[in-house]
Amino acid sequence: MAKKDVEIIHPANKLKQYVNDPRALNAAAIAKAEAAMEKFTASIDLAAEAEPDLKEMQAAYQAMKAQPQDCTAAARRIFDLAHDLRGLGTNFNYPLITRICGSLCRFIDGMTKANDTQMEIVRAHVDAIRAVLHNQMKGEGHAIGTQIAEGLETLVREER
Figure 1 (tube, rainbow, N blue to C red):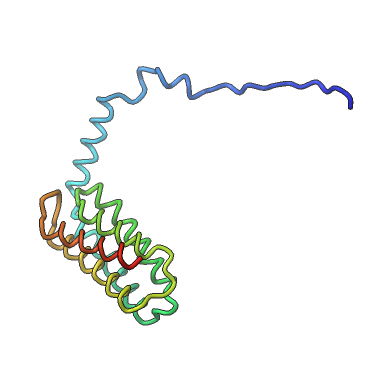
Figure 2 (tube, rainbow, N blue to C red):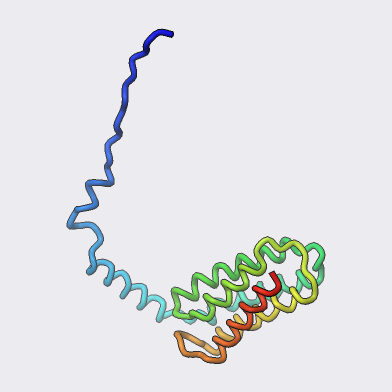
């Protein structure tokens, strides 16, 4: 076999120039962005904004209930809505929404059929999400909400 000339190419690392750049993100820029986000989220009523999603989640639950032996599409829609609300919960200071929606996502992910117990667990999550938003249970310190979230998480662990 004949020898072949080999050329090794080392591409330029263009990101490296930004790592030590004083114009790169710094604490002041981060604080400014966080303040802007806080101002933005304070101006929005998540409960009102989420109402269409809650109605759609309820409709998907009803579709799931109507066809529990083939509920893939309805379960996926509930998952998608809960996943989106989970992220909004964090941004809008609704840690219970983040927690309950996370529990619902873990439970319903990949579900193709549901028995009566599973349907009740989904319904309990949907009801809890609605209650947290309608009662504007923002921040920490909601003992009843925390107990509900813990109960839902226990149900998910036991049923999955």
